[in-house]
Length: 174
Image 1 (spheres, rainbow, N blue to C red):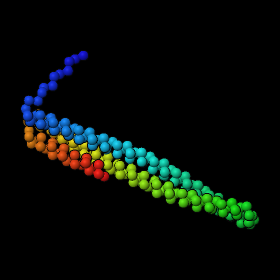
Image 2 (spheres, one colour):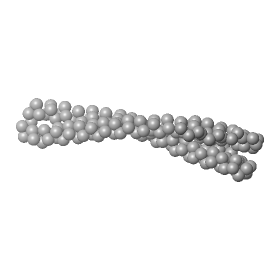
Image 3 (cartoon, rainbow, N blue to C red):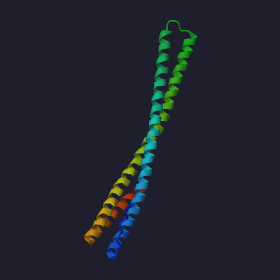
Image 4 (cartoon, rainbow, N blue to C red):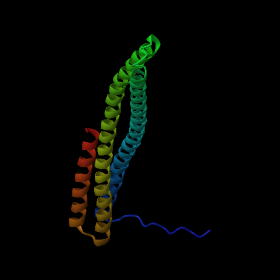
């Protein structure tokens, strides 16, 4: 197994400050990425639950429509006979259709709430992605500042890191 190369120790105080800055930025980035991943997972789960509810809504719609059509058909076919049994069956089917329609409204409200929740968590994930991008760019710029021995690059990296941290913090308050 080949020997790993030795990593030289930072001797310049500027290099030490930049290295510490990079470490802090990386830690902040890990918190932002973790929060974004959690939000993404929750958004996916809520989307899946909403899809289940919309499928249930469609099933209730189909049942309501079938009950209404069946009741209407019984009334039309039994118009000449006016049998008590077909009339009772038609009334029962009409009541069943109304019950399905009432249940649909509750399902629709629940599904819309789940969709709103998924949208909310998706926006948190988007905000965290933007913050993480700024933090990653800040790490690269700070790393380049060590190679270039440029204090301006270091300050630019810290500015971008600050913007990324603020953007990431706002994701916690969404």
